[in-house]
Structures are given as structure tokens and as C-alpha cells.
Length: 557
Ligand code: ATP
Ligand code: MG
Image (cartoon, rainbow, N blue to C red):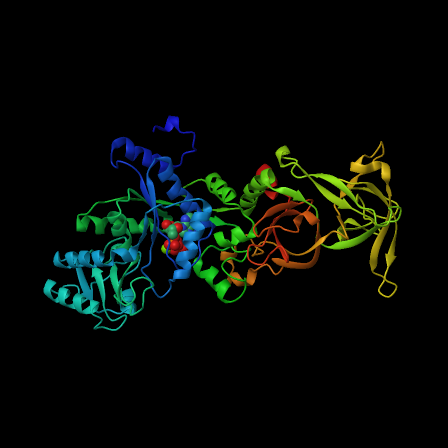
């Protein structure tokens, strides 16, 4: 396939892949997505997933899902399961190509022995602290360990004893023998193995030696025949080491290419920080709808299509930047606007009594399901004498430019009649408005103004027919665009990121809303029936996103 034939927007990695295919450096495209199962996937991972799986798809290759499970103390099966569920949900499939770095522990051990025999690796007795002290700095070379010149025979014997569990954690490591004066700190005799007497979720107690990321990663890529190993920019300085290991072993050599990670405003993306929020109860879990995790976004009501569209729009570049979360929300609105059904829901109800509407009468009025999609058809909404309207849609003393209901003023009830406010009833004790009174114009059915100017249109539900719901209004988890820059990121949590409304009233067609069903509540925003807590008998809706698109404004500015 040549670039001219492909309408896809290109990026520098895609260009490199095209070049490699043209020159025959690689016969096809095999990529991998290599999560560490130490947390849930987040929107940043989605960028990597879309890139890895997307390139493989485009060029008729394949993408492996490989768990980088080299650190048993921080990893778990729960995370493994969640990662697989989330990658599938996002719309990608690894087919038969599910792998684990732990699948290769035997092979990696043999390769380590090979490097020892070649005089290119040695067992070191330095502690982690001593190693740090002798590593040098960016401007100063490191110094060699006294163990560096152990004989091959001694190294082989010690390494075997490390494997058998004869030494306590942290007392010995295996290090590559490269160059303690190298300008690149990663090449200053990096650790290949450390002792960790911990049970592994897959290999149990077979191993007490665990490979470091750099030692495991490139070799895993090589075993699997990966062509392009795509990773984020922080691995750029590791590439010389990636190349060194593969060359020292003389095995098949994939190509590592780095790209800028996604940073998103008003959130944090480090798994360590996300775990803190979960453990300290700042959120309800990894799938809290305010979390930037895929599980959280899904529960919030995001569609996989909108996330893929977002990843496409942000593109792939080499320079770090911060993407405004408003762009993600924009992609979501565009997708939902096209496909979800409109419904009427009164979040904070206030009673509206139509004095001249016959008691006991009920009319079924026709309402359009989605003005963007005529094929979505219409539905019947019951109308009667007592309705609920939004508290915000009535003001006894209206401020300037208030076009909703107030005494003496007319508004149009969506899909129904024009009403005119005649007064209010108040609680004699508290003075609180308990109901708004009005009259309706029977000739105005369907909203026909018959020549008069009616400025406001408000939504409503029939009190006798409404279904109850809990509605959870979500906002950004952090109140500043760059929480990572705060001294303590938890000090800039948005205290108003969740508001729970327990007495909301919905139109009756929502009675059987299935968990995860999405709707637009007219004038309010997009909502989803909570996948965990909502059931047809007890409805719980999450606000996915409001209607006002702030991105459009940012883009114009
Ligand atoms: P963290 O540093 O938060 O623990 P990580 O990068 O260590 O995240 P991994 O599970 O190792 O998490 O990531 C798997 C893959 O996803 C890696 O290839 C990594 O480069 C990529 N990735 C992680 N975060 C981002 C991000 N914000 N943007 C793009 N790609 C990312
Ligand atoms: Mg990582």
C-alpha cells in the first residue's frame, strides 16, 4: 500500500513504518500493546492502543496483547482481567496473540546465562543504595563495582544460587557489563535481575528472581517477532539499552520508536496517583465515573467510538503537550448527538398545576426521538393537569433576560401547550414555593404560538406518570488544568465533582432503561443509566456531559 492510496492522516511513526515496508526492512507489521497489570487502563493507554492496534489493522498485520508482568508485588489478576475487558470494549482484538513477559522467564534466564558466559553480565553484591551512589550523575561518570570482574565461573555459580533462593531480597543483582562511564546513565551496568521472594500471579513460587523492564521488554519483542515496538518518550533514553541487549544476544531485532504520551487537562494519568485516589477513597473505585480510566469513562457514558475519534484527532507527535479535556468531551457530544434518543427528565422538580386542564384527563402527545435522525421516530408522552418542571425554570421575580416561567408570563411546554403563569402557592410556614399555578391555551397543542411571541420553551413530565430516579451530576475531578503541578495533587481535587440528586422525575418511557443505556435529557445534557447501580426498578443516571460545547469556543479563540 502506498501513502497516496491511503486517506488516513499520517504521522511520523506511520511514515517510518511505510518506509520500512518500502525498503523491505520488515516484511509486515507486528506491534504489541504491553501494559503492566498494576492498575486499570486510562485514556493515555487508549492513545497507545489505538496506535498499536490501528497500525497493525491498517497494514494487515497483527497486534499482540502482552502483559508486562515482571513485578509481582504490584500486580494482580484483577488488573489483568480489567485490562482485557477494556481493550475489547475499546474495539480491539488480539485474537490468539495473548502473551505475558512471564511466559519467557525460562528463556530470559538462559539468555542471561549466555551473557554471563560471554563475559557481558555479572553478579553484584552492591545494595540498591550503594548502586545509586556509584552510578554517577548526568555530568559525572559512575564508578565500577568491586564485583565487576568476577570470573565467569563464579558468576555462573552465584547466579544459579540466586535462582535457588539462597540469598535474601536486595542482597544480589545480575548486571549487564556495559560501561560505567557511558554518557547515557541507562548503559552504566544496568540491573537485569533482582531478587524478590514474592509469589507471582502466574508463575507462583517458581521464581524468586524477576527481570527488570529493560531486560524483559526487548527480548519479549524479539521472541514474538514484533517489527515496531512503539512506546512513550520516557523510553527514548532506554533505546540504546534495548538495542544493546538484542545485539549482545545476536537475536532478531525489532525497531523501537517513541512518541509523546497523552496528557489531559483537569486529570492525572499516573497509575500511582490514580491508585492513591482509589485507596484513599477520594473516588469510589477505579471505575468511578470521574476517573480517566477506560472503566470510569465507560461508566460515565463515553462510547468507544468517541474515544477512538479523540485519539485520531490528537494525532501522534514527538513533543509533549497537554490536551484540553474539552476536546474529549467535544468528540463525545458529536457522537452522542447523532445517535442517542432525546427524553424529558426533571432533575430538580417543582410542581406546575394547570388550573383549566380537566382533572383526570390524560393526553398522549407526540415527541420526536432524535431531530438529528428521522429514522429514530417519535414516541408518546402523557400530559395531564399536574406536571413537574425544573426549579430553575421558574422565578417569582425574574432577572433580566429571563425567558422562562414567571408570574404573568407565557412559556411553551416542549411538545405540548403554551401555558401562562397565574401565581404560586407557598408553604405558609417556610414561605417556600410548593407549586406554580398556570392556565393553558388548548389551541396551542404541539407548541403552536398562533402569532404570539413566546420566548421560552421548557421541559416537563406528568406528575402522575413520572418515574423516580437518582441522578448523579459529575464534573471534573480536579479544579485546576494541571493538577500534577500542584505541590500535592490531592489538594486540588474539585470538591464539587459529584452532586447526587435523589428526587428526579423522568418521563415514563425511561422506566425500563437498561443499564448503560444512553440518552439526551433535553436541555440538560447526555446521561447514561449507571451500569452497576441502575436497574429498571431503581433507576440511577450519570450525567455523561453537559450540552454546552466549550471546545468549539476554545477552537475559535
Ligand atoms: P504509569 O507510568 O502511569 O504507571 P505506564 O506507562 O507505566 O503508566 P504501562 O502499563 O507500562 O503504564 O503502559 C503500557 C503502554 O501504554 C506503554 O507502551 C506506555 O508507553 C503506554 N502509555 C502509558 N501511558 C500513556 C500515555 N499517557 N499516553 C500514551 N501512551 C501511554
Ligand atoms: Mg510502564
